[in-house]
Each structure stands twice: as structure tokens, then as C-alpha cells.
Amino acid sequence: MVYTGYVELSTSGHADMHDLTPQVKQILTDCEVQMGTVTIFTPSSTSAITTIEYESGALDDLRIALDEIAPPNRDYRHNLRWGDGNGHAHLRSALLGTSLTVPVVDSRLILGTWQQILFIDFDVRPRRRRLVVQIVGELG
Image (cartoon, rainbow, N blue to C red; front, top):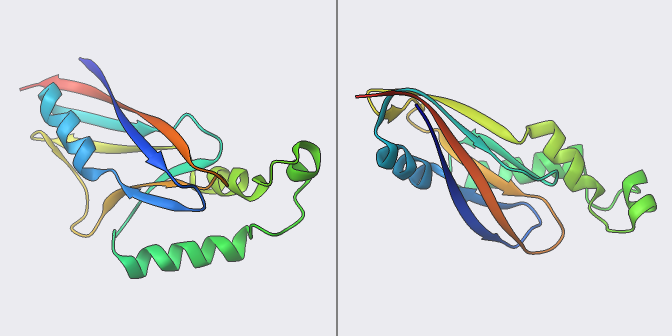
């Protein structure tokens, strides 16, 4: 069986972070898949999906690391070409990735004790994001 659901978000950009775990769990409950995989995908080149312990210290550490790797105030060729100021957002998205796959066993996401699904919007302005959650698996 294949089931597709969506998560709608309003974001503020500038590394705005959202815990997707509750929404993904609800979509999994709704489709009643017992064994399989869940893939969460952001159809955007300026946002990313990863896992982290969703607590303020870890989130701040991730923001700091990303500022060091791809600082927003650098002269990016993308910005020179398009003038939109989000060259760093494209790099951060490419580095972290736009999708995540999580196993499902006994109708539960297999995540570590302190592991949550994290969406980050790196763009330089508020956005409406529609994330795709696709579940492939066997019904109970």
C-alpha cells in the first residue's frame, strides 16, 4: 500500500525550525500501515529535513554550526545572479537534504529516544510550505 499525506506550515525563514514528529505520527495512524517506511520530503531548494533532539540547546548549536558552514552574509554567486539574498539557504538545504526516510514497525516510527523529525526553513522571508509524507508498507 502507498499512502500520501501532507504537512502544511507557515514559516518565518532564517533557520525557522519545526518538530514534524507529531504530524508524521498522526498521518501514520490515519493510514494504518503496520510495517514499512515513511518518507518526508520538502519540495523546496531552501529548506531541509533531518533528525535532532528537539530542544533549545541542540537547535541553537545546529544554527551556529550552519552559520559557520554557510554564513548568510557571504558573497554567494547565486545572490549575484538572482539578487534574492538566499544563496546560503540553497547551500544549507543541499548539505542537510530535502528528505528523510524512517522505518515503521508495528505501526510505530522507529526513532531514537531523543530523536525527532526536524524541518528547517532557511529562506530569507516567511513562506507557506507543504511537505509530502509518503508511507509505503503493509496494513495490519
